[in-house]
Length: 339
Ligand code: SF4
Figure 1 (spheres, rainbow, N blue to C red):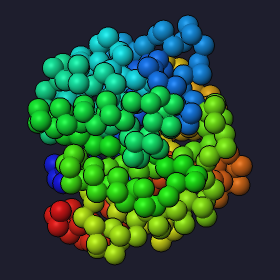
Figure 2: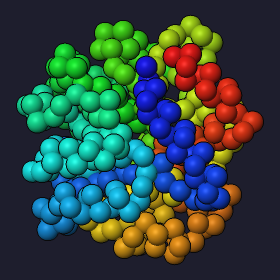
Figure 3: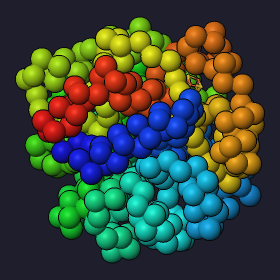
Figure 4: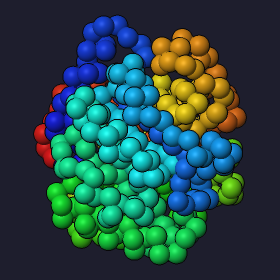
């Protein structure tokens, strides 16, 4: 099952509670970045461009727990940098599971197989493996040959030990839908992952490669091609995404972003306005909500930095909240139980 039933119910009831409390803005997924250090230098990523004295630092488990407790999001994703390089990652994950958070540890998998004994399988925990497509596409995206094979071996090892395993695929300009059809077949039928997360690449200001990001209409066309067999019912691929977010990617739904729904906390504090843009930091989630000029961001704002953005971290929270609207809730429940 893509989004586990327990998680779907917990997140759905959380959204309903926020609505009943009259909250206009609330977090769904906290992007907890405990370090920026990484053992890869991917061309579409801007995280390792920080100065070396920043790359050497990491958040303590206590700082992570303070942020998680203050924010209150039911789901915590741990990206980076590479979280498996954090010396206390085991303690951080255990503390989050003890708080009954649904935890996704996002990793390039280079260290995964050697790290599996640090973790215990749980309904509250899964590895989210960076895998940008079939071998030739992934190894080029991460700028290191052989990385794909290491990731595939680590996924098999993690599944054999009973862990929940997801893949996280960023799709860039020039991609061919057929490559991804074969890739999704392989990931679903041979690796048996629990779900696949998709996102179009975002034009990161700090990314070394500025030439392969997608504009909105290009994104829609590409995802129509990529998702066509799934939408036609010919493929039973499992996506770790709300069905409405997939509709957004193909242009069947129009949304604006709700970046407060997936806030990002790192060594610098709470990033304004989102995981992707660096426009200052707040010292608490409350301060982030109260001091960010949200109307300056998103498609309707006219902000040039946002006009081509359709990324998962900006728009999935919008789609998930839409699924819990009174007019959509019955259909959403049917979708979850039909899986
Ligand atoms: S559209 Fe939203 S998620 Fe994308 S860059 Fe702008 S503020 Fe961030």
